[in-house]
Image 1 (tube, rainbow, N blue to C red):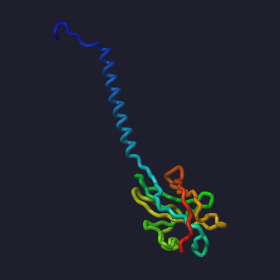
Image 2 (image 1 turned 60 degrees about the vertical axis):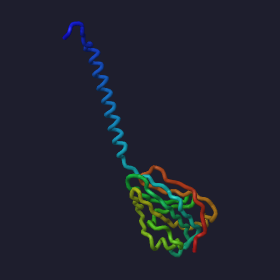
Image 3 (image 1 turned 30 degrees about the vertical axis):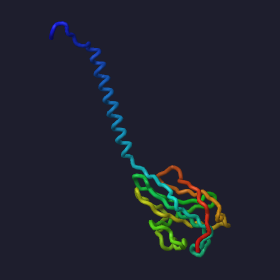
Length: 171
């Protein structure tokens, strides 16, 4: 070693090595946590605009209110929709579903669409129409009146809600 050149003290060298090691460790932890967060799967169900609420339709020889919702799963895992509700009126967990829009005679839904009482599985990126008939209990659904509807998704802690205006049942 040339005369007059001195190295840094061992204490300062140790502090520098520890600081560099700590900075690298923080960067690696941040990268790994970001990697895990981006691969987390979730279901995200959205209500699309063409939803219908019909008052006093004849379904299976009985008067029922008919609720039809159009939903899409924009999440990364399958969503399970298990119940539709008209707040203050009633709910039903026997769901009828189809990827086709509802027919002009909505009472045909209950004989032509698939049905389930365990929920509709909605794959990521897919959309479907879901319908329920809620027995008419004294004309609670009145055409021209707005109602809050709720869609219950197993993977979500709270129901998805929107407001819809009731219409006369198309013949």
